[in-house]
Image 1 (cartoon, rainbow, N blue to C red):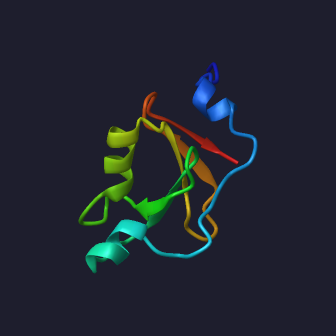
Image 2 (cartoon, rainbow, N blue to C red):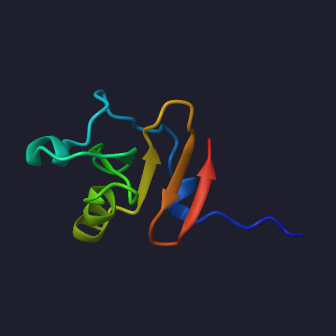
Length: 90
């Protein structure tokens, strides 16, 4: 079985950004809650995942066009490209 080729958005990332604080920046402003955190690899903002009530990271992607986020969860080492719906572990 041939291995799927990664998109250019995922292969272009050489250094993964993870937020300094373990919070969703938008949920904090709105006094909201989150389940898991993701960090945008373009601008470095850390926001909540799609399992969280507000789905801030996906909203960020659609507003900004920034294609790749990384899991900001401890012990998770993966990236997701929204545009190509592809994942890469690192």
